[in-house]
Image 1 (cartoon, rainbow, N blue to C red):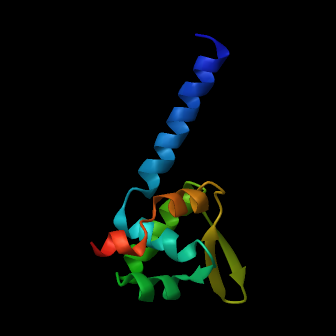
Image 2 (image 1 turned 180 degrees about the vertical axis):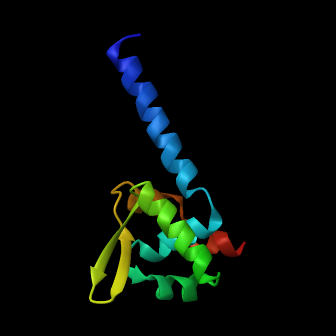
Length: 102
C-alpha cells in the first residue's frame, strides 16, 4: 500500500474514533453547551438535566479523547472544547430551528 493509502486509512480511523466518542445524546448536548464558552460541571449539569455523576463521567471520557480540556480557576474547574474540529462539525450538523420544530 502506498503512503496515501496508509494516510487515508489512519485518517479514517481517527475520524471514526472522534465520531464514536461524540455519538451520544448527552455528550452532544455537553459539546453544544461548550461550543461558545467554558462552563463548570455544575453549569453543565443544570443545563443538561442529568445527574452530576453522569455528567462527570461523560466529561472524563471527552477529556481522555482530547475533545475537551479542563481549566482550573481558583476552586472551580471549567471545561472547554479543545479539539478544533468540534466547533465547525457541530455547527455543520445543527439543523435550523425551523427544521427541528417540523
